[in-house]
Length: 192
Ligand code: AMP
Image (cartoon, rainbow, N blue to C red; front, side, top):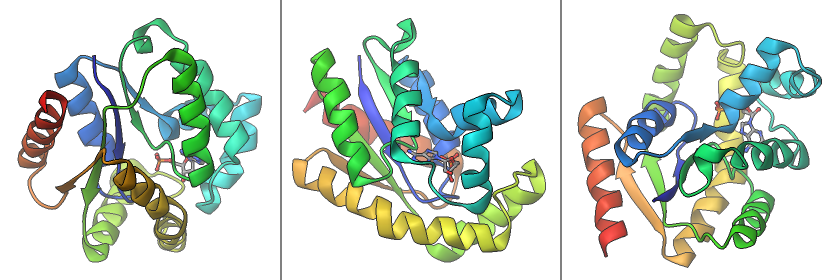
């Protein structure tokens, strides 16, 4: 079973693509953003701690995020394969994930990166703000999240590229066409 990561700037549609890819490959899509939003909604201690960071467009501290992910990864459905969405987002988190997977004897297969232009990203996020009413989708917060992606998360892409497991897919345009090319790219890499 496949062990995948999907990456892409905020607004790149990675959450939607993650769900389609996970269904295709028969693995759970594990989104740290969704896990945090569930905690915020349920008003857990973790949710209270994370919510403030999220509303400001900041990252939740690495150790908080990593502990939450570790717990989720222990669920039975993630035992053999998974698609991570939104983790790792920092170089420190790469190391934490490496450690987690080394303990399980499970190397990563593919890191898929969705690429899109800044203007398309901003437009999509502002649209999502209206549709979903997410509290972290105001313009100032969006700009902060895009800047953090550039400063903290692009180095993650570089690191995986050096390992030779990064695949980039054009994330602009039709949702179904993007899903199809992402599936083809991942299947090619898994077969090759
Ligand atoms: P997302 O839905 O992936 O855009 O995540 C929403 C928010 O959750 C982010 O803006 C962060 O505040 C927080 N978050 C999600 N994943 C991480 C992570 N790996 N590290 C730190 N913060 C995260």
